[in-house]
Image (cartoon, rainbow, N blue to C red; front, top):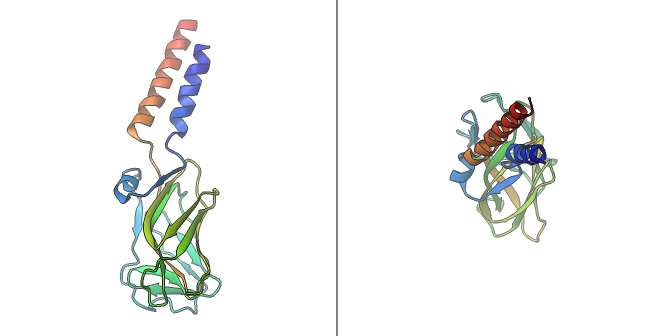
Amino acid sequence: MKRAILLLLMLLGSVAYGDAIYTDEASFVSMLAPDYHNEVFAGWTWGNPLDSSQLTWDSPVVNGYSWTASSEDGLWSYVGALSTNNNKPLIFTFTGAPVTAVGGYFASTDVNGDVIAQDLIVMLSNGTIETINGTAFRGFTTDKPISSISFIPIQTPFANYPKIDFYVGTAVPEPTTVALMLMGLAGLGIARRRSK
């Protein structure tokens, strides 16, 4: 019985930080390992480097993280953000180090890049789905690697273009999670010593 309880504590400690959604940037960043990358598309301007003739764009590798952005009607660059040429889904496929944390400022915009009160669906490869109206910060952590994140604008009579800048990295457990895991390991050690 004691062994089962201790194993349960260890299991809880090992998964407690996974599959969380954050609406606050500071709280999300506090859950990232120090080698994360914050992609703000520095130096990008209106239509440069992406002018809708590109269906995909491969990021440079930063701290081991890289990705491919794609959209079926082409990609477009704004000042400090990536978008699409049309109101079509924007997909990031992670190609570098395993990603267990991704988040950022995600927005629905009009053709000029101005935020509009339209819905944008954010969908992770693990099945997590969030809907954002206008613009908002969302951060996601999980204990299993995220292979992609998609941004799907809701079709309306008005043009709706996703506009993105984001963080990518590895999630780390909260201190309470680490403490639970250590308590479980210590308990397992004590139980083993008693049985000898």
